Length: 305
Image 1 (cartoon, rainbow, N blue to C red):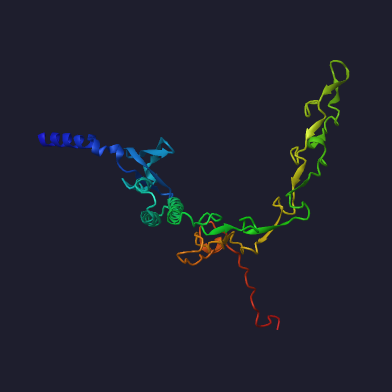
Image 2: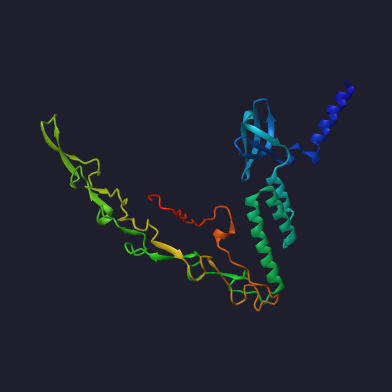
């Protein structure tokens, strides 16, 4: 009994020590059977439910998860917490450390964080380039070596204006014929604002204020909502048909000729110009893919003899 009591005292002393605060441990990862992953700190665990504390922005929230819905629990392996620690430990302009962090994010499947690291790498590389060539870095392209295509304004396609709406994407509303304030005559009162109804108490017809138009005699056009314009059905409101830009071949960017795409005037390091690839060819998630037309089958033998 004395040994058990001493053991309990020792465990409590370790847990309550400032260097090993249980609340300061890494977050836990709860993987559900549905495939969803929840990162937080497990505060309480019973045979039926888990009580988890999650970080929502700068605040914290507690949720309850059924044990039967849990696939597995990885205690103290919160990837988000580990990423934040590595990110805060980075030094300015340390590109090699950033590249190591990027590789770690890719290995752990942290896609959102990988995008953040890539942006930081590009920013730091530009800063280093400007520090190295304070008087020679290219101002027009911002030392990036690329410029937005002027022909398509960086959109990758040119819009041929719609012949019906002249590129506006909207046409005059036919329902209200673009009348004043996009209104129509009230059907109930015929635009008078009042209508006659038989009053049995008086035994005659009396004029009553129209409740549909509130006595105004006009109602808002239900087609255009009073805007006097409607979406062009020929171009579906886009203003025209998009075709691939001839200047940039749909790449949205052009190489800066002033610095030979190096970011530095005269290209002192003799860097080869980078290849601009289309979004369809990069293989990124969510990038649109070109639809390849299906080939028609070739009939070598006449089936009708």
